[in-house]
Amino acid sequence: QVQLVESGGGLVQPGGSLRLSCTVSGSSSSSFVMNWYWYRQAPGKERELVGSITRAGVTSNYADSVRGRITISRDNVKKMQWLQTNSLKPEDTAVYSCHVRGVEVATGASFDYWGQGIQVTVSS
Image 1 (spheres, rainbow, N blue to C red):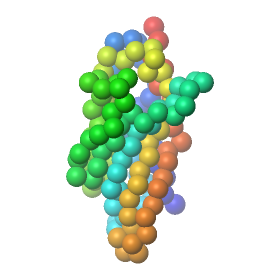
Image 2 (image 1 turned 45 degrees about the vertical axis):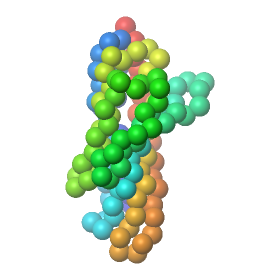
Image 3 (image 1 turned 180 degrees about the horizontal axis):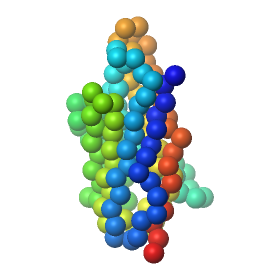
Image 4 (image 1 turned 120 degrees about the horizontal axis):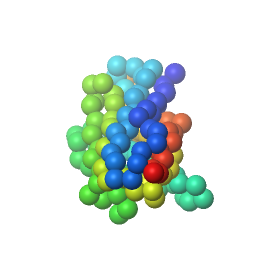
C-alpha cells in the first residue's frame, strides 16, 4: 500500500527556517512520480498550493505569499521531496501536505496520492 509520509514539522519562531520532508513508501520500483506538490491549509482558510516540482526538477506555482522564501527539491530515486522555508512568519502557520502524481510504468496506470499532513506553527 502506497503511503506518503510528511516529517519535519513543529513549532518555529518567526524568522526561523524549517525543512519538511515527504517520503513515498510502499510503491513499486516501476512507479515514477512525475509531479510533486506541497499544499498548506491554515485554520479557517482554503487549501493553498505552495509549490511544485517535476520529475525533471522544474519548479513552479510558488504561492505569492511564499515566493522568494521557499525551495522545493526532490530525489527521484529515493522518492522523496523537501520543502525548505526561510524567514517564517506567523501567517505560515498551517497544515502542510504532500501530493504526488505519477505513472506505473508496468501498467501505464496513473496514480495520485496525498499525505496526511503535518502541522507547522510559527509563533514566539
